[in-house]
Amino acid sequence: MKYTVTWKPEAHRRLTELWTDAPDRAAISAATNEIDKRLGSNPLDEGESRDAGRRILLVSPLGVFFTVRDADRLVEVIVVWRYPLRD
Image 1 (cartoon, rainbow, N blue to C red):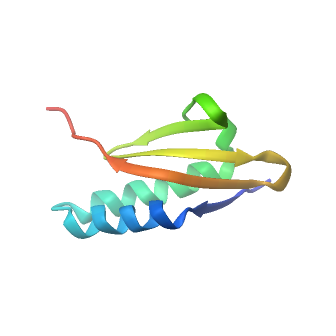
Image 2 (tube, rainbow, N blue to C red):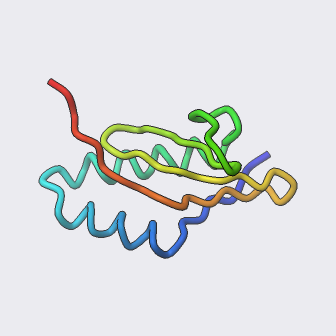
């Protein structure tokens, strides 16, 4: 059963900034699509749990914190950031 994935307005604004400033916009777009796909499928099996009911997921070059409301089949991305790629 699918989950609906939403992005908090602050996270969506930050994602837009990251994409606008990125020298590799395709990588940001691909990571965003993969995050949405994975969280929409089975979010409780993605990433690792953190405090306050949050989870963390890394899909290079992005990281996100998200919450899951399993009863509502709803995932909310609350924070997004770009992390540096290692050589």
